[in-house]
Image (cartoon, rainbow, N blue to C red; front, side):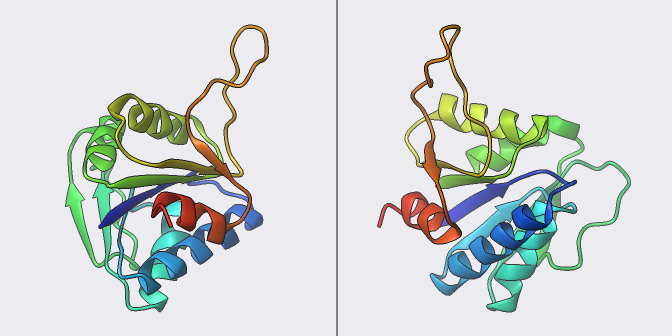
Length: 153
């Protein structure tokens, strides 16, 4: 199983801690972690997974930056932000930690794809014009909850 973990490159300490824990929990279950391969949440989830001898694949944009040292391997797409579609379509589930515009696009792509769990941990809540929550991703309150929902335990 492959789970994509998405989140902002410029993350809060709480988001970094949550992402690291998500990586640890996924690796402990033998899940391959997919991420954007950059900093912030991406680096934290990769570090957590690698600390538990997990496999982490970074789906990189080819923006000239070096891939994170925590990655097991990286795929350079040369597609900029469009790489988000590759990340989502390569996953069996998506966990978004925190919120940024790029993270929102990954959640939206995962919801449009359908057929898999999409979990948000401390991130976006989308509402309609009347302020009513739009049905969609599951909202988790802890890393353990996010992993449980993603793996459908």
